[in-house]
Image 1: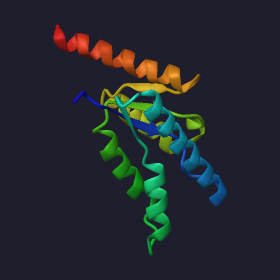
Image 2: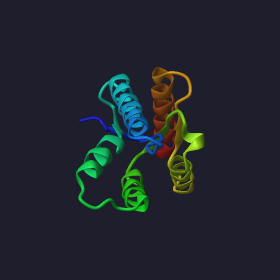
Image 3: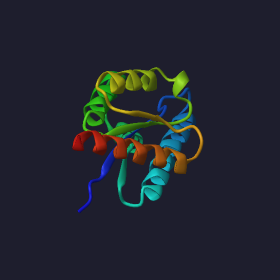
Image 4: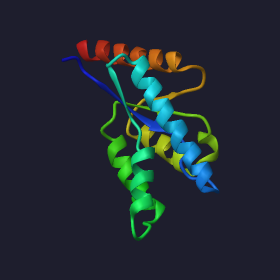
Length: 135
């Protein structure tokens, strides 16, 4: 079995309306699916948006945002790379996750052009990492 690359998706979640939150969840989920497809079985995108959203809607008491951020960071620490989606500059949570990933030495790949380019950048990182490991 070949090694799977875990790619944590960083994209905005919060919004002023429930429709805005749903749009953010949809965007992050679509980005994850496209990365999984383009990665041809070698990349598994870790997208916490749909899970957190579904669970949060069913909880009797709403925990503070820090509850979700702390769990997200624990998951991110197990990932090989993070992929940053659109809208991150206006999201405190995204900026914080990027800072944490960088402080942990987790490569940060900005999804700015196409999914194909993003996936190519992930594979370039892996190739470089594998070369460093061999020397």
